Image (tube, rainbow, N blue to C red; front, side):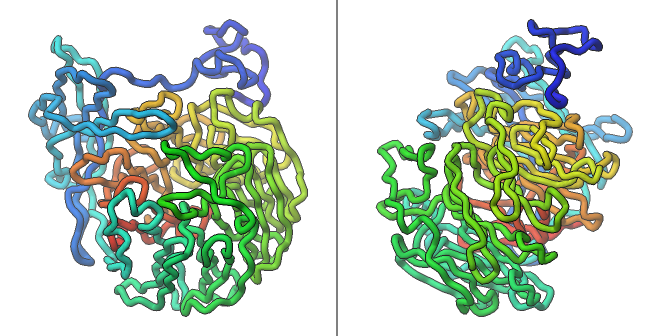
Length: 599
C-alpha cells in the first residue's frame, strides 16, 4: 500500500519487486507501472463457492418479520460445468463446536445460466443454488458457516466461511401500494419507468413521508399508512436514468422541499416544490440539457459521445432520457446549514456543475472538460472557513467555484482503471482536525493540497463511503466497492467490497455477485453504520435479497427485494456524506417497502 509519494525501496522489506519495492506492503511509489498489478486481488476462473444470505420470504403486512437463511452457492464461470460437491457445517463462534452438519449437495443441478450484454461483451452468469438453511432454527447467538467445495477427485478445491448473527429479525414497518402502473410493463419497455424512493419530512411533524418519482413523468408523496398527499403526472415528462430529485429542507422552515425536473425535452424545467402540497415555489429553465440534441444509441445500446461530451440525453425506446441530473444540498454561502444546491448535469467524464441558492439563483457554474469527473462529487468544508468546497474528478473547487488544485489522473489511479473518478467522499477521517478526501479506487489525499496519503489500487473502483462502522477502531472507516468484472469482462466476479481503517489497513473484504456497489445504513440504536450489499446479478435466485453486514464483516440481517435487475434502487434520506438511512427503503414491483431494525 502506498504511503505518500513513497520511497523507491523499503529497508524493512525482504521481498522486493524488480524496482526494489515490496510487493505486499509497499507496492510502489507511483501507480503507473506494471508491477502495480501485483497487489490486486486475483480473479477466480475455476468453479468457486460463495456463502450468501438469502431472504426466506417477503412479509405481507406491517409488523411481520423478515426471516432469512444461508445458501451455499456454487459459481461456474464457464461451460461445460464440472461436477462439484458442497460440504458445509455451522459452528458456534464462541465454542467452535459444530451445531449443524448440512447434507452434501452435488452440483450442477440442472440448467441455471443466463447471459447479460454489457460493455460490448456477452458474459455468462451462473446463479445456481438449491436449498437454503434457515438460520432462525438456531438459538440467538453468533455462528460461523464453513463450506468446502469438493472436486471430481474428491479433493477440496476451495473453501469459504462466513460469520453470522442470529437475533431479532427486521420487521416490515410500512407497505405502501403505489398509484403507478408502469411497473407492469415488460422489462424492455419499463427501463427508467419503475421509479425510485426518497424520504423527507414534508409537513414538519417529525415523521418521514415517502416520495416516489419517475423523472419528470410522475411524482407522488405518501404517508407511512399509505395515504397519498398529492401526485403529479405528465405523460410526456422526461425519463431519467437517475431520480433527478433531492428532498431537503432548503429554506429552513422545518419542512422538506423537493427539487425536481419537469417537462419534456427541449422544454425542461428545474423546480423546487413545497413538499407537503406539490406547489411550485421556484422554477427556472433546466441548465444545459435543453440546448443539447439527444444521443441515439446504436443497436448494441452503446453511447457514442459520452467521453467527449458527457452524455446528458440518450434515446431509449424512442424517447429522450436525462442521463445524470443528480443534486445535493451544500453550504456555499456560509449560512451554517446546507441551504444551497449543487446540480450535476451529465453522468461522467465531462459534466457541468451549477451551484444555486435555495431560490434557484445561480451562484456559479463550471464545465469539466478534463474527462475525469465522475458520478458523485464530495461536498465538504475542507479549509474550515464555514463554506463548502467541492471535490470533483482530480480537482478541488472553492465555495465560489474557483479551482484550488488539480492533479493528473495518472497520479490518482492505475492506467488500467477507468478514465474518471466515479465517486469521492470527504471527512476528517483520522480525526486529526484536517479533512481528507477519499476516492473510490482506494486512495485518500489531504484535502487542502491533494497530496496522496495512501493508495491501494483497485481493478475498477466504483464506490467509497466514510462512516463509523467499528467502535474498536480509531477514527472513521472507509468502505470501498471494486467492480472486478470491469477488468475480467466476466460478471461472475461481481463486486469486491472491503472496509479499511483511516490509515488504509484492510479490516475485511468479501466478493459479492453484484453489479452495484455496497451502500451504508444507519438504523442501529448506537448509530453505528452497517453495510448493505444487493446481489443483483443473482437474477435466477429464488428470493432476491439485500444482505446487511456489520463492521466486522458479519452477516446480521437479510431483507427481501423483489425487483428486476437494474431497476431497484435504495436511497438515503439525505445525500452521500451524511451517512443516514432510517428507516430503510426498497422500491420493488408497484410498492414501497419500509423496514425497521429488529435490534
